[in-house]
Image 1 (cartoon, rainbow, N blue to C red):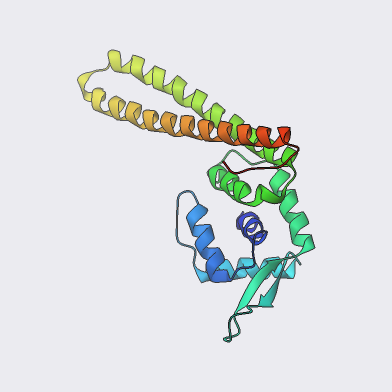
Image 2: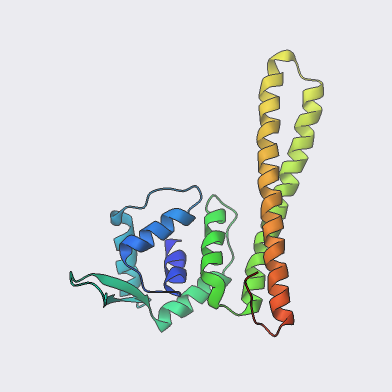
Length: 191
């Protein structure tokens, strides 16, 4: 999973393992610390596979090395970007990794990723809304000892619904932006 983000990040610039760890930490959902004991084995695995090479840092006299993506690594990244995402606990992180790495992909691939994400979020939203209505109905006839638990279940679902609606709105904005880019001959503009 982390390979996707690392290769996607290296598409924009060469980076040290330390910097890549910081990028990884900032994108993970939920956010968590990535130790060198996690990061460097992944980088070594990518290097052994031929997806990255290590190059000396130009402005560093201490022998610092930077990871650099190879042509094979670009192909591996593309394969990971177009592969389906399982509906599991890692789904949100994987999509965020894909968003970070898809800039170099053709417009059709970017649209595919965004549409798949939107479909997954809409499925979640439908489930949350259905359960929300069910709990509201249960609350109307609940015994006093169940009211607090049902009320908190409803509040939690309100949060999940709001998060899902925000994700759908964001995705629609990105799709619209890419649609505008497509209308302009594929030129993407940040607005």
